[in-house]
Length: 208
Image (tube, rainbow, N blue to C red; front, side, top):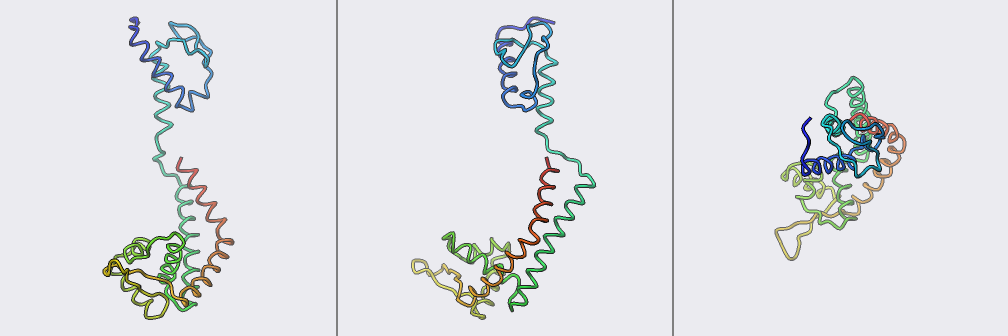
């Protein structure tokens, strides 16, 4: 094997030290076996010069494989995804039925909830912001707010500095309905939440 120049040797030592500091696999190994063509290498052997191509190639290959996401989908993945969708849909179905029992649409409850959250975060509750939070089109948000204004759940207020800008605000009736439904949602989460969280943890472990 041809001898390496000093610059080449220094660069490869730098590359090897970099891999040592960034790869969990390298950190878990104990290099006690002498490297071919050189002195023994240990973790403390910072002055050792590595000139074995196969060693560096092996480290680089393992480092790359560790960083690659898993692309295969197993039967367990399908089961975990199905369980996640089931528990999520079950919770949402119960909350939708509760909203209807309170005399409002499920989407109206969602808008009430978003208004309260925006209020606590001191974010201006414009139609555009609400459309984004509900993931609906702007004109759909306008229609939704119109229906809720007619039921005295929310109100509109124009911004003095910009008459074209309209804020949507909670009305007392809307606050009362929201408070009742939010209490029920929290109680439901305490019951159904652990199963949903367990499924999410399983999915998180499988995605690694």
